[in-house]
Length: 113
Image (tube, rainbow, N blue to C red):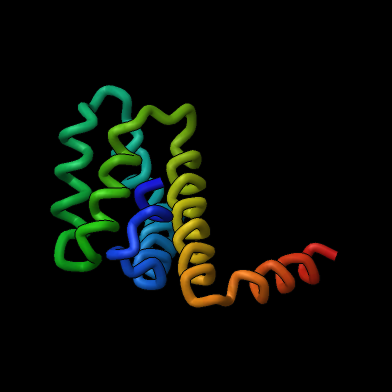
């Protein structure tokens, strides 16, 4: 909700950064396991995210990913799926703000056929 409610967030940049994080988490299985390890505190995992991503992506992205890793996940793959869902939400938010949401919906409808 904070993403879609805030006009100060650059949704396009956020979508791109979250998509990059999704690719990273998908590719780096060992990192994904560390970030979803229930034996580690959420805060220590969030600190790791801040160290790894700080300076590479914006603060909003670090905050969102830190929030994700503070949560408990049944499977490590669920973290990747959640990051991808956030990226998609940011992308749709950017389309809505840019007046392109109808075009995106049409493309998705055609793709789904």
